[in-house]
Length: 507
Image (cartoon, rainbow, N blue to C red; front, side, top):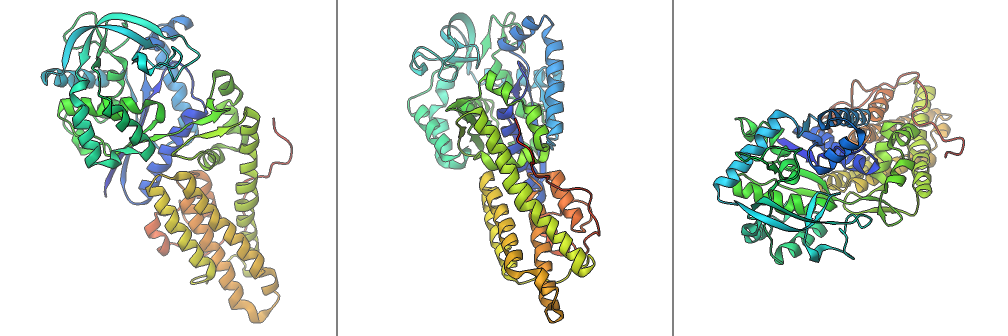
């Protein structure tokens, strides 16, 4: 088995998850599940970023100690991800003792390389994204990511990291490994940044007590990004023996707003510490409303829990991945249009197309063949399924998840058209057409079997149910085992409708 180590950005512990967070986590989970179906040994890490100024202030606003605050928040995030069926193998918390040890060891390695020095910082600091900003980065005097917030002028003595030493090494690495930053648009952004040269950055804070103590130094904590980024190592047990079995990561999944940290600062830290770089950093876009990221009020109106309740966790996963491209933004004009499109996609793809295909296929085989199915090989539908699955694999390998779902829906639509054109109900009335009827029904079962396997990364529970309704044992098999495990007996009855249609208007 090949190893595949995938991570997401760890989430900041100053609030609760919303749709934007779920877009990243579900997408990464789809990739992890797909790699398992291809036979890889997968490690999938997510977690919480629990230090820093914002977390401390939020705990103070709540009137509790920061440790108690992050414990409560972490449990709520974990419950959300469990409900959405994430298959993560690890959940890292930056307040854990193992993470603190890893961060301090990494800082010591960077110090030993001569890349840490003490100096005074004077400049702008965005408290919302906990990032130092050059004046040239500001837009109308504000942080470009948080234009509604005033940016503060900060003066303090910090330890600095010689990031400026790594401009050319990073350019060389990207030239030799263009797959390091994906998609291409994000790589081009980072290249423009590097071509302008890099400035040294703070590695510590002297006024933020809630953080990892800076090694062998009183009164300094590790700067929150220097603390957060090593989570991808600490979760593997770094610096203890054994972490090398999984490092370097095969894939970091992050949002496009933190590429500078993951594609510049993080690899420079690793270079300084003498550690290998991750193979690929994939920076996805955003689910947006009216041209901007979800505001707090919009996130409350599109409450994640209520949205999942709307049609269930698996349908939520499918619709989110179907609607939002994995390599760019998906902008909805308003909250109302978002909710309407959410329902429309459910009704069209799941209730009408896929649900109807499954229901009538099972019903016809039960009615015309007493639940037994044979035949269906080398038909027009079979060939269409193979072509669509070839495209599906290409899109999954290139992480075009929305396009892969379109390939699955191509099979669904071709199968429904096959039913309409071949009219099994008419064939059933003609004894001379018995073999043709077997061919038609067998091809439909094999199409649905392929659909269940291809949907398993996106809708694991519903894919299981489709497979079982086709008479398959257990869960849908890995792709390379499907040819040996075609369902051969459809159960006489199924419990309930897989995707109930929306009968009344929703809020």
